[in-house]
Length: 405
Image (cartoon, rainbow, N blue to C red; front, side, top):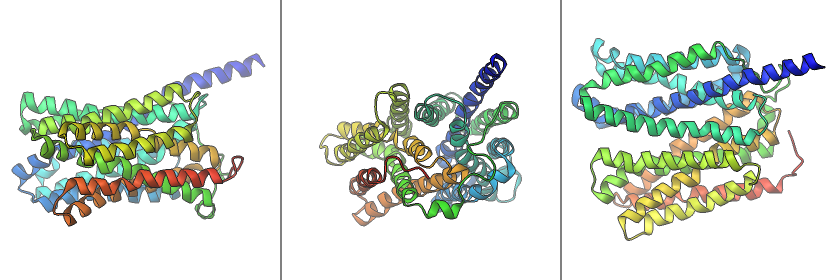
């Protein structure tokens, strides 16, 4: 008995090394999603790419991640968590490192940029599919708390990429962007080595997890998928346009706009996730998500209807605070409601979240254009997503509390 207890204690101690590696995994995903958009103007000046070509870089990044999310549901369990997560970090490192030389080597720099985007997007997509189930499978006492804290590192990573890159360019000039890209590539490269050594558990034993058809046949799964879509859309609809709003609404420079918009948004979103990780034992998760959704609606309305631009910026920041729990919270609810969902469940929920990340900003842009380039009108339309989140929570509560699939 004592030997078994010691073994269990040693096992739990080993998994304490797995969780920090997972934190760095989400920092890596933040790097691949945030760094290149900071260079769009630089790419236009240096390589002569058009605005439509720049837009395609972002589209290709998220489209590739969507494809990987979908494919991951089929191949991750067959290949194994360890091999896939190591490959994810190596792909991310290759794409970031490749930015420093591949565009310059090819006859068409834009083709080089596309190649690098695909490389790091494959890595980012795999990380999104794998990191949450890896942490969920660790022997932690409070799964919801661990998941919320895990996802906060995407926020800290986003804030760090914006702050450090902005400071680096201010000190050494934007022409030094290749060096910065190489520096960021070191993080996933080192973390790939770390993931080769730490213990990694799986959510279910081989053959025990639900099939994709089984997931699709469960009503509760569709509610959870809709919640994930609303989570991604509520977040990205504001964060994608926060910098543009700060520049147009307050008339500040791009550097200040990046800091006042997406940087502050990320800080408050991360703070919300850390807050819940600390007090998860005192606050029911579904009620916290419901309250956050109400705050999100209020944040959008404050942003749109405030006659004072500075208060509108406060609305942007409050939106970051309000959406923090949505994405990790839905993952935690799904794991509790569908314990045999396995990797496929996490992969498809990530796919739904990414669809929200694409559809939310697109809706804002479309409505803004239809309203005579009124960004505030577009943001008002995006308030539909936290409203839908509340409706989904009501539907979820209608399912049996004891129901587990």
